[in-house]
Image 1 (tube, rainbow, N blue to C red):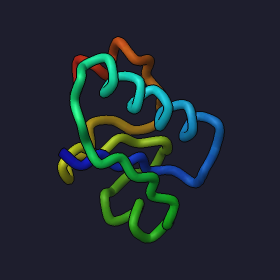
Image 2 (tube, helix red, strand yellow; image 1 turned 90 degrees about the vertical axis):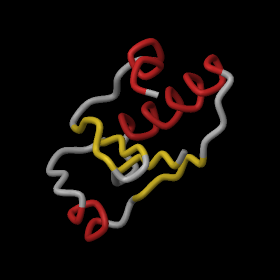
Image 3 (tube, rainbow, N blue to C red; image 1 turned 180 degrees about the vertical axis):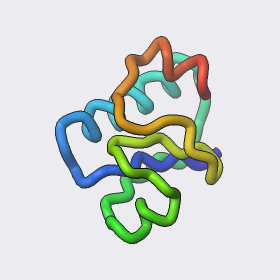
Length: 75
């Protein structure tokens, strides 16, 4: 599984990254988690509001940083 956190490095982006890592740990799942801060790459996904979560190439949401419990349901 490849998880991309799309964002320019704002506080919400960092929170989302940390929450994804925590959710994966609680689920005992492994995944490649990367931060994508390149604006043209973010735009290719059609994301207009960050942070955004992309799982295996599919945008799951954008514009918020959900908590660990909500993320566990998505992963």
